[in-house]
Image (cartoon, rainbow, N blue to C red; front, side):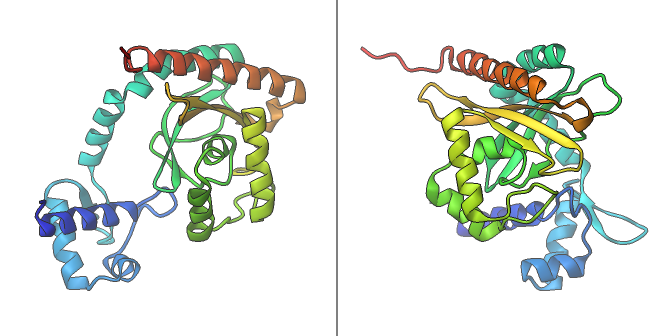
Length: 260
């Protein structure tokens, strides 16, 4: 049986690191203490320990906490060791070459959607999305393409715990309308978004499945509305569907168990 104190330490480490996001990358001790409901003295000792190991860093100017450089090293190694990313990247390059738009690869984790890789377009005007960025599940083509295939109780838990905040003009904020949208995605096999996460941005995405047919990731295209029209959209949907199928096939080579 695992040492309960060690498990509690790991749990606290994850809780602290999960506080940092693109929306709030910087925290003061007081803000973290209030957010995590932990005494300042206890939390401060823990933060200093993480600082010693390069997991967190504290600015000498404002005394606030930020993610440390060791996480960047770990993240780079994790990305390189991910079979999905390795398999998908050549297909993503093909997708960008065929469309001239940015291709993104996303996965679902802990009621958020995470971008694990991207291949950018050469256009100067492009959608900005960083690898490692975490996004809400209810907005954007890639996020909805993953949310649509979650178990119903998980979908309800996301809505209950995360809510449906309005991020842009066309974000789904009504649970019933979102359910209709997710059902449509399951029926047609792809997701489309137009100004759901960012102004003047669109996206299309399709699910990637493992050998059992379970959705494990999504591949999508995103770009500015100045290059958007219905004709291109249908072309991009078709290309994304083919890309997802190709990645699924490559990913599953050697993964399916042999039966006697």
